Structures are given as C-alpha cells and as structure tokens.
Image (cartoon, rainbow, N blue to C red):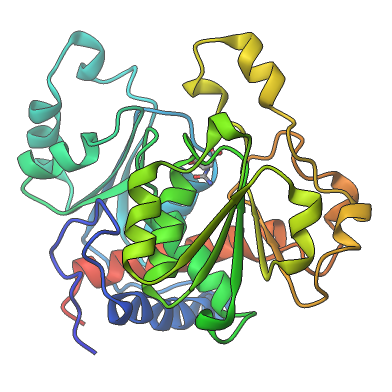
Length: 312
Ligand code: NCD
C-alpha cells in the first residue's frame, strides 16, 4: 500500500482517499497488537513530537503523547501555551518556525479554525490538526471510523446518526466527510434547529451521493440507526450563557432510550460527556466510548505518527 502520509501535514480530511483511511486502519491494527504484546517499540527513536495545545484537551493530548512514547520517540508536551512566548505576543508563524526547529512533527490544537493549517505553512516539519475550533478534528474522525469498522462491516449499508451540537462540534464535521468517503449513504443529523450541521458539509456529503435527513427528534429516529454518535453542546463556543443552558441537555441517552435501538447498533461519543449519556448506559455492550474509542485513539495516532515519520 502506498503511504500518502509520509512527510506531509494532516490538517483536514479533505483530499484523503479511502485507501489512505484503510492504510491507517491496517497500521492501527498492528499498533494494537504491538501494544498488547510488548507495550511498544523503538521505531520512532530519535524523533520528537511537539504537542502545541492552545485549548484544553484530555484524550487527544494524552493519546498523542503516549503514542509517541510507545514508539520510542520524544515529546515537547505543551498542554496550554500560556508558559510559552505565545503569551508574549509571538506570532503563529514564528511559533511554527520555533517548534519545527526542535521537533520532527507537530500536533496542534487551537480555538480558531485554520490555525493548524497556518502553522503548517510556516513549519519545516509536518503538522497534524488536533482540533481547530469549530473546524475539524481529523484524527478523531479516523479513530471513530476505525472503531466503527470493527463492529459494522459494510459502510454502504449503514445509517449513521450524528447527534447534538452539529454546528460547533468539529468531530462530526470531519467524521461525516470520512464516512461518506468510505461509502456511508445514509446520514441522519439530529440537533436543535439552531445547532444544525453547516450547509457546506451537507452539500459535500450529498455531492458524494449520500442522503442527509435532518430532525430534532432522537427518540423517534433511534430505532433506524446503526451508529448513534452523541456529542456535547460546545459551551466554549457560546457567547450567550442562557442559550447554552437552554440547549445543553437537548438529548440524553438513557437505558430506556437504548431499549429502542438496534441490538447491533454502536453508541459512540468523542468525550467529554456532560450529561448527554446517562451513566447507566455505560455497561451496555453497544457503548464503545470507554471500552474502545479511548484506546483506539492511541493506536490510530501511533499509526499516523509512524506513517508520517517513516517511509514504511
Ligand atoms: C472533542 C473535541 O475536542 O473536539 N474531544 C476530543 O477530542 N475527544 C469533543 C468535545 O470536546 O466535545
């Protein structure tokens, strides 16, 4: 399989091919086996990951860090940029020049869409988008696609429900595009009207031959769904606190609600959850957020780091 990731930035899912996604998934399988057998390897010894996180993160940050360490590489772990020259007013372009002088690859999270791409333009090393504001979250989309592929065989047969804050949630922006690319033909977008999926994403999916249905009624729709992908209402994107409070618990998945879902469905969440999935649901075998998505994030990021840093 050709490695189209080698020495390239990965800031958007646009332009990725089904073969690229399959290459990451195949490599992630190998990484999972490696970690389970011996914890890791030395394959990225001598390479350094700079993790520049301008926004809070638990999973993405830790899984990038552990991914690099499990492959024998080193890290510049900046969880928050408040102690760097960014706080003195250094420009994004200069920050890119600085950290790409020390690291071999950068993972960047920023509150503004497009900043990882801007850093990539000024960096001498590849840059991975670890979430840019309301824009994209390409590595989360890869790990979610990988997770789905382990449970449901044919993407073209699936009905995928994306639920919650579809306007501001970057995970669903990247995920819907990758799933359409992999052959998903039926999307149901479930949100309050004010938190609907951006029109340009709907147009992209439709232009790839996928049908998009929109509704605000999860209870009515849940029996049809193969993938139930919950997201939180993105508090940090709201200027009106009362509006956030009004919308934050628009949907809550309970045991009762799950009793209407398919036996074969998967329930996913990129996390953190802030009330959208009741704890009583965690033991449901269909709930994959703790059981699989977390670790798959590490395997997929190990795979991506390896593909970017080594010719294979
Ligand atoms: C998501 C994010 O940061 O976009 N979290 C994550 O990376 N797992 C989802 C969220 O914050 O709601």
